[in-house]
Image 1 (cartoon, rainbow, N blue to C red):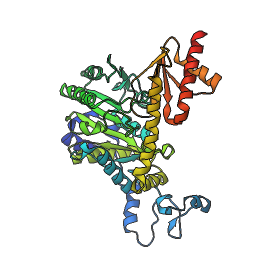
Image 2 (image 1 turned 180 degrees about the vertical axis):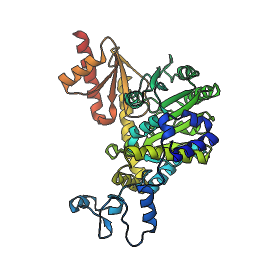
Image 3 (image 1 turned 90 degrees about the horizontal axis):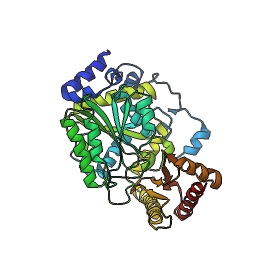
Image 4 (image 1 turned 135 degrees about the horizontal axis):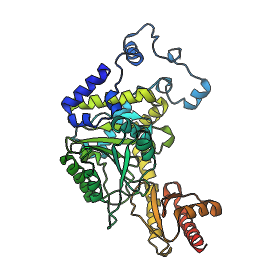
Length: 432
């Protein structure tokens, strides 16, 4: 084993031994090189005041070399903030700005010990880092039965982990915390579990209420006290899009100091929060009472980044930082939130109007981009295909009877036509 990896492992064993036990084999082996091109280039950048012939970029006239036709479209930005490589951990000012944003939007974090967010190539990359660091073949990854299909690829196919599902809703159509607890406690013999908490949920658009949030925390605490090492991952892709009475903060704050056997990991990003899907800017953040443990986890994370993408795209990090520092940011974001909330409210009013009879019910939703219909007497795939071929309308079929509808991408004035047409398609398929 590389001495740097051994040193990081020794730190975790000393300062956070349950976290060391959570690491996968790759997680134990990985490290960020202290000697090499990046470290020597960083030293040269600080000290080489005559010539710096280290890192592999081209320069001209004291600036990164670039094509005028590209710079003409980005003239508001300094070439050094666009063309150079970003550090593997991301732009330092962006990391600080995102951390400040996290605390502002999650006041419970104010007194908690957590690391500086590390920039990822959006949410999927952050989840992939979690999988690499903590998931080995056969490890349990616990998710609800209403989930984003990419979890299977990221944790199951890539890392060989076992996906274990529990029903998202209980009989009262609230979050099924008892199911989560039972599934966690079932991993006692393994001694380890990775739990992914995705709120607002994709595909249902559901966020638990404050009381349900406390139940989730209690379930994870019970598992930890029973001897299960829990990697608790909050997938906060749609954070902030809370339209009704629900939790308004990420569970990361409550998980941050929950128990020595619980490692809280927050995966989030500008992707959906700031409506910049193609920018691919996300973050991964760890919580621990030990600064040494946080440093070790950051170094291992940087090792994964260095070994896979080397570093994230610099231009989009600059764009996001510019937005966060702009005085118009909060106002413009509030405008978009109002539009999204208006669409969600309109959908619910249509569904509750009684105009669609009993051809479907719908799963509780109060946030995010989506909602799910539970169709009666027809399959979701048959309706999806009929809508597409006969009406030119796209939806997502999930399982036998669930149809996901993204109201996020439909103007409010078109929602009535959309749901009326879905209703027509359901009745037509049922009559076949």
